[in-house]
Structure formats: C-alpha cells, structure tokens
Length: 438
Ligand code: HSE
Image (cartoon, rainbow, N blue to C red; front, side, top):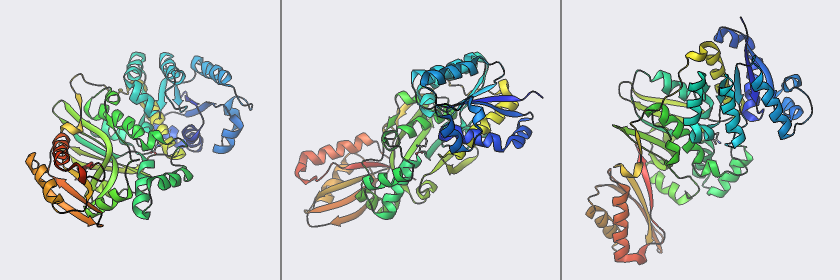
C-alpha cells in the first residue's frame, strides 16, 4: 500500500521527539496505521545540531548547512507543494503570523495537520478548525493539552457516550513543580523558580507558565471538546502562582489542603463556569497529591462518574508520542476523522459568579476582637462558615484562615470591605481568597 508520508516543520524538543519515534517504531506504526508511515522530510534552521541532538539522519533535513529564515520558508513551501506529503507536523511553536499562515496553508494544500501548538489553537482554533473542515482534512492536537496524556482522545472519543459535568486539572508542570518544591522544602517562589529553570522545566522567560497563560490555553481547548464552547481563551479568567507564599502553603497544610494551580470548568445548562488560578485542594482530592512536573486531569461525568488521567505534560519523546498517535490515527482514518465542533449555545462565565467554597487568609494585627469582627462580618453577608483555622500569633501578627461554605467571591469582598470600614488599621496585608476544591 502507498506509504503515508509525513513532514515535520521544526525539529526542536517536540519535533525531534516525533521524528525519533517515527524512525524507531516504523514497523509498529505501519501495523497500527494499516499502511506504511514514512517520515519524508524535516525542516529546521540548524540541521546538523538538531540531527545530533535527536539521533536523526541528516539526509532528512535536505542539506547540512544552517538555514536562514527565508531558506527554511522556501523549503517549507516546497513541502506544501509536494503532492506526495500527506500530513505536516507543525512543531515550530508560537503564534506568529508566519506559523499561523503555514498551518492554514497546510490545510489549504489538502494535507492533514498535527500540532502541539496550544497557544495557536487557543487563540485561533476557530479559524483553524474551520479551515480543516473546509479542506476536509484532520487537525490532530493530542499533544497540545497535557503532553503525553491522551486527554483529547479520551474526552473527544472515550466520553462520546456520556456528558462531561466538570473538568479540573493540573495542566502546567512548571507551576506544579514550583509549588511542590515550595511545599516540600519550605523555600520561596523565586528560589523554586530557579530550580525549575535549572531542571529545564521553566523557560528563561517563564511568564506563560507561572502566569497561568499556558494552563489557560489548555483549558480553552478542553472546554471546546467537553462543552462545545468556542473562543474561551478570549475571556477566560487566568491567574498564576507567582503570588503564592510560603505562609499561604503553611496555612493550606493546616486546613488539610495543598495549593495547586488548577484549571477548572463546570457546566450548568448552557453556562460554563471556568477559571485558571491557585486553589486550595483538599487532601481527599486526588489532585492534591500530584507533585512535581506531573500533569493530571479529573473529569466528572453524568453517567460514568469520576475519571482521572495522570502523566507527563512535557518532554521530547513524551509529547512526541502524542503527535505520533495523531499521525497513526490520521493515517488510518484520514478524512473520516471529525474535527471537534463548537456549538452555538454555551456561554463562558467567570467562576467567581458560581457559589463555591473559599478559604480567606487574614494577616492582621494581633489584638483582641479580630476573629469576632471578621467572622461576624462574613456571617452578616449570609455566608455560612465551615471552619476557622490556624490562629498563629506572633505578638505583632495574627494569621488565620476562614473556610466558607459555598458562596460568591463578591460576597466575601463585601465582608472584607465592611471589616475595613470598621478597622482599616488591623490589616497587615490584603486578605487572600482561594477557592477550595473538594
Ligand atoms: N511548559 C509547559 C509546562 C509544558 O510546564 O507544563 C508545555 O505546555
């Protein structure tokens, strides 16, 4: 049978992993795909360096010389014009006009596309899925969410007979590594970030990871699959882990919780409540025990109940394996693969509008009457208190936490405003509000 020919654009961490697996598992892939699957061409600016790094034959790069941007673009154009190439893997990354344009041209040229580019899918997914549908081609993106974990396939196909009620997950390994190190070693954010950079988890510019943007991209992609919600990335509320302190983590432990950067989305009719941010996760919830750079996703379904997926969210061969899974499935099913459709109904709302349990951390002056004042103000807003925890006195400071029953964030903010109106002098720091995930 005619081989299914693949070209890989960008032979960095992920593209190199794809190429390596395709060469190492050639026979096995042919068996799974029902036809030979051939790595036909690679494009990279630095062929010799990339070939050596990933153990790849230099011949696949079309030459040994380093390429200028224009030369790489010309080689890419030749691949797009080659009718023999069936599928193009985009592993250049980023959301530049060039990368977006290449993806669109791949589809317009009548080729399938596979990519790990979560930022591009989150920002331009609507256009790309529409372009794939128009071309009648498949857009594989298993690697874009949680690297090696086959969460796309599970939600899209495994849950097709069910209804997803909620999805929560740890989807950024760098942030989870940082929080785990801070907790285990009692170090601050800056020191833990440095360790993450030394380990190669965090980029030199870690903004997208620690600011929650990367996790937001992944959740935006998942809510399209789980709830049919398009364009979530435009309005999704996202915050990161850089403001989490050692003191927050200590109080969390006292409240039987771990602080994790959580992507959370839940549906109520046509409303999808979603956010990305640090949450206090109760120790009874599996996600609280996911440490290091590991990713995990927990889905609650209407018929089948709880599902948990755990695995590696990054890495060359790890993420590469997810793209190769797309390649095999597209080689086998090709045009019969249905790209995930968005529906017109679902609306995205901020989690803040949903009654949710919260823990509020107070750092106040250590003087009589504070706990009474704070808890009364909270009760006066109709908020039912679950627990008042860990009153740490130092003579100067009293640090304590109030965990509420489900309430809105705005009602907590009103209570804080009332406390401030009475005794602005008692606050040593702005109270911190963490949603609590059970
Ligand atoms: N930088 C991401 C992480 C992996 O730390 O999980 C790729 O999205």
